[in-house]
Image (tube, rainbow, N blue to C red; front, side, top):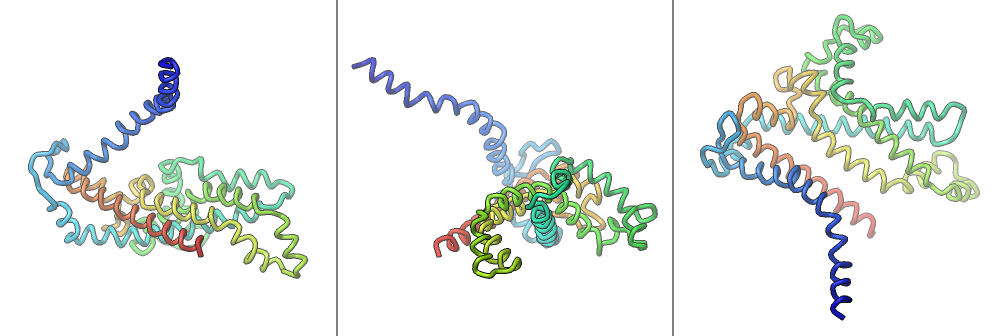
Length: 291
């Protein structure tokens, strides 16, 4: 009887033992730094990031009364909107183009998915050359003389288009998988009912992929909020503060101004913004699925 009890306890405990290594890694590299960030956000630090003076919520109030931080929020909103439109549009359209087999469609699928495999820092250097005012390919093609990364009117939009294109490769894979799983019998039934291609797209394709579309929408928002490498390499938040998104402002406060407490508070605010947006989107999705 005692042996059976021990065996039962071992059976109940053993699965959790396999989770311990992953739990330790998450604790050390994810949860502990996050807890430390929250703690540091209530302090003034020295140049090494060591907490020196307790500052309470003053870091947070300083941020919300700062014109620079308010500008970074507005810049981030614009950036995220353009990234969403560009990234999801390119991903969806290219997935539609390859949703039916034709000679060479595998090659096109590889090309459309390629942005996913390119490091953002590497492609930023390529676009830095392409967008050069004197020798850049874009000005040569369009016959213009625009300084895309220095003119405040174009810098943010240029960065957002580059980021959207970088995201389009992964979006293409998600949308391709979703379109491949649409039941062909639905299209056949629609044809029998006299539906044209537009009606099939509107009433069969879009409803069938709405769940994956919502998922792509969420991960694109999170990814856009966290974009950094291409912004740092191409504009460093300039000209002025026209491309100084929240993530770059965090970097600037921490590693250029050595205000680690303020940067930590800004990180927590960014986390809360993303968490609230994600919660709202899931709430709306659940309401729609129940109705």
